[in-house]
Length: 209
Image (cartoon, rainbow, N blue to C red):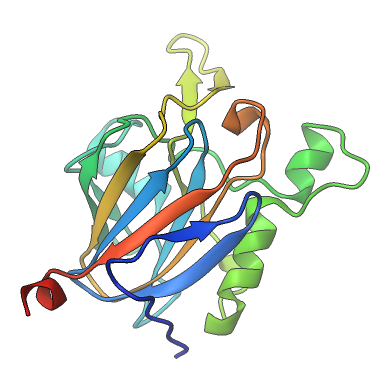
């Protein structure tokens, strides 16, 4: 299994409309930061022991009995194991309903003649070293994405994120993981502009040494 453990305690930046992937050890904390405000970051997590096990929107929302997750909610896998747990959240509004944007998103919804590959394409490229192929990519946990749901009709509306500059959400890994992150590529999701995302891994065991 391919591994890439990023330096801990260091802020890393994802350029607008790009993505990255890395290994995360059990017990480490991942913090996703919106440095400028109103920018979504799609997050995926796969078990390092068996990447066929990945975060599951359906199981997580079913067990939570609500669609808006925050501290201390767990993110379950398709095998009903907790992969991540939210440990801090200064924004309080994220999405776990909508699929990563893709070339098809921009073709079907936006009518783009030459569509960007979107978060989906960025995930495919970033996860290739781990052998995770496009058909294995699930619904992402969309950090800072503000999806409004009409309780009567079920209609979905994507509004600008509520995140302000410097807002963050942190997750602790319950098992060894492969994690992928993007700086989302959809204009509607990000209040009409594309901005970077920052992220950091902290390790309490290393910090205690």
